[in-house]
Amino acid sequence: MGIPLWLAVIVVGWLGVKLTRPPVWLVVLLLLGGYLIAQSFLGPVVGSVVK
Image 1 (cartoon, one colour):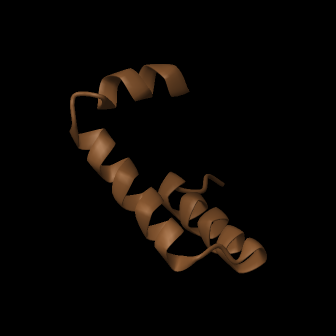
Image 2 (cartoon, helix red, strand yellow; image 1 turned 90 degrees about the vertical axis):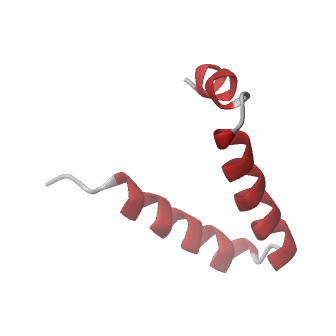
């Protein structure tokens, strides 16, 4: 049985927020920053570094 990646990311994110209780602004900043970097010219560079 395979779990979809999006479901695993949601579960891990939800657990992380519930257990560590980061500020809401920090969560929003990380999500928005990640989205903007992925859509920019830095996306392929970050992708190759993460791999």
